Every structure is written in structure tokens, then in C-alpha cells.
Length: 120
Image 1 (tube, rainbow, N blue to C red):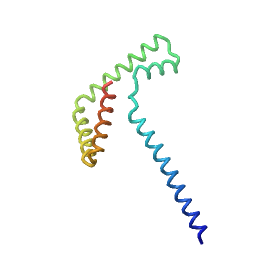
Image 2: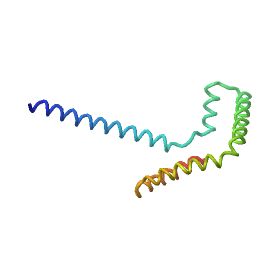
Image 3: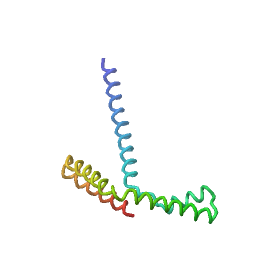
Image 4: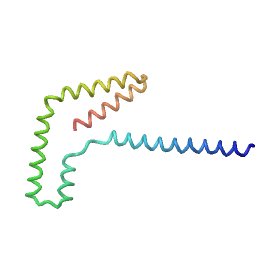
């Protein structure tokens, strides 16, 4: 009768250890992704140029097209940006209200890092 209990206990302990390891790994991956700097537009363009093997003239043309696209998108977003910012700020505040003091300090630090990386 003792052997099945022992095996069950070992199984539960093993499951907890594996679950903890997986949870920790997933958390580290999410934190790394969250804190990773936003895409460097210049690096992305250079990679695109290199991947496609573009000539200097093609590079200039592609860059002009992408710059025009970015300008048009900024123009479209500008009128609604305050609304988008309000939605973002509201969600951040709602999350903060559900945290204890220690978690709030961590949350505020995370937001500072996200805001700083967004300004680059």
C-alpha cells in the first residue's frame, strides 16, 4: 500500500518541478521580449536591402516608398492618437489599481522602460 503512495508523491513532486521550470522559462522569455528595444528602423531596412540584394538606386527608391508610407500613416493616426493614448493610460491605471505597493513599483518601472524604448 505504501509503494503506490510513494510513486504518486514522486509524480506530484516531479510535476511541480517541471511546471515551475516551464513557468520560470516562459516568464523570462516574456520579460525579455517586453524589455527588448523596439525595432531599429535603420537595421530593419538594411536587412531588407541585403536580403533582396538591392542596388543603390533600388535602396533609395525603397527607402523613399517606406518614408512616404510612414508619413501617410502618421498623418492618419495623428487625429486619433490622443484617444489611443487615453485607452492605453486607462488600461495601465486599471492594472495598477489591482496591484499591491511592491507590484506597483515594479509596474511603474516596467512602464518607464516601455515608454523610454518607445521614444527611441
